[in-house]
Image (cartoon, rainbow, N blue to C red; front, top):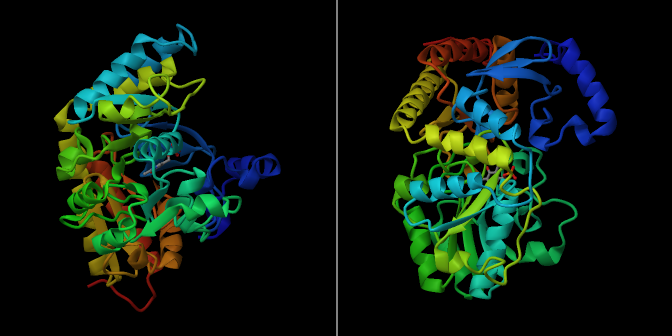
Length: 438
Ligand SMILES: *Cc1c(COP(=O)(O)O)cnc(C)c1O
């Protein structure tokens, strides 16, 4: 697990060039290996479940572009759709049929969703949804949950998950106190805490990841999401589901189908771009009609609804019309989670495996993971060693304890079994010498 091992030559020299001109050598902090030590691999190409670094090493990939690639890398239908679209022009700055088709597709998938607006990232989708919620309610405050990540809009960089949790910088520098002061923070799965924050009736919306997937994977307890819906209704606040990860990941019909709760506004990203930069937000017509040019809430984007991105997204969602995709990724997720649990038991490693469909997380050192407070106790040092041992063995995980493993439709049973073999090898390397398998 020395850096030299996970730092082959081409990646190393690319990283040395990158750090000279790009902060930290990366264009998104979660890609850096700060939490696990070492330096990021530079990627040359990827196909199906496999990713190849600049030195030609092959890994079974469980990052899959942070969940965007639910069908796996280099999916032929998505790639062909993007190429065909690109041949007609990269961007027009005017409406195209592809935008209409993708919007129609999204709306057809999600019960209760009536209108959507395309943007370029999950961050933009959330930022716009919050603005809309404030306009709709005439209120200023928003409630988020500790450990949930909603992109890097100022208002959401308060007790955020993912990179912010990993680097131990829960609040970003450069966010004004006024803005941060309008963001109230509750604990995931704690309805009483939310009730208390809502009492002043100055909260525009409660935003939540229906399954939290940016502090590892934390599942909503029975009644948590419906409880939020009821509380929001009682106090006149809107409920916003941030489905940038969960949307089209857990099932075709999103959180509504997953938990039977309809939010007032929903945000999407990742999967809906098929690997291209896309986000979207949507809701009921009467709320969405407040958005410009229909209404007074301004929100715009030079490249929004980009034809190449729309074509890629449409191809992805079209593939997801096949229920067999979900049946299979769930089955693979279950196989992976069960196998990991079994290995930790056999090696007497204190751990907790959480799973929601194809989202899997192995937490070291804790036996429950229901909120940010509990996951923060995870043994990140052991994760770092495990991460590097997995990398050496040929499996690419996120370089942080607080991220999900994303299983894609390209992952075969064989990939999962191979991964479990590698995980067992890795586990042997991270446990103290004295501990022997049962
Ligand atoms: C990734 C993510 C975002 C931010 O999306 P970007 O496209 O990275 O801006 C927002 N919310 C959730 C739940 C996410 O996982």
